[in-house]
Length: 64
Image (cartoon, rainbow, N blue to C red; front, side, top):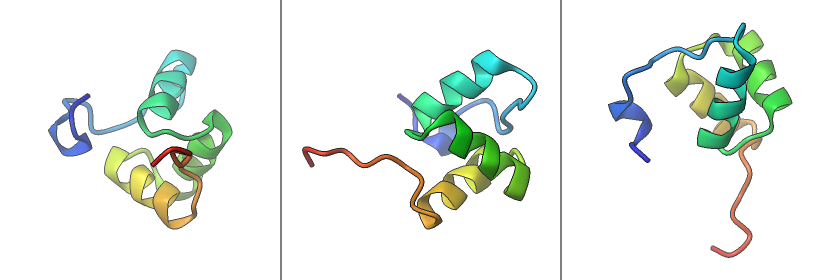
């Protein structure tokens, strides 16, 4: 997977369920948390990622 800064898309499409599902996997978060982040901060991938990290909504790897 590419780092977020190297991805072509810079915005998350809130109107596309498949996009929400894909981005929740990429950003390692629940779909509801992703939607909440977009509603609060906007749909910029980097801003949403930062929001999820700051609000501790990203899943953590149990084995690391």
